[in-house]
Image (tube, rainbow, N blue to C red):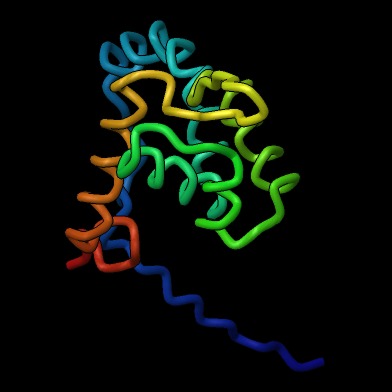
Length: 134
């Protein structure tokens, strides 16, 4: 019976070589970590390429009707409505009806800032694989 030696090259320059932790820091963070629970849904909604395009469009034009959004993203009005409704249901967008048209806007300036900052961040090369590598 032959044995095979398998060499596993583990890159340790970005991990601790020994396991230890600062108990005070860990306890402090663990007590507050649940504060972030709603943020996951927010980022999940914006991680969809269609919805982030819609959110970005609403930072350029403060208000767009569903038909405008459909043309901007190259979809049907039904698809645009679906994505806008999801953004609205998560509190990221709001709507108003004017006659036969429905207009959407971002729910508040926080959402506008979030999208704008994410864009600036991505232009700096962070988040696209060009981040802080050494």
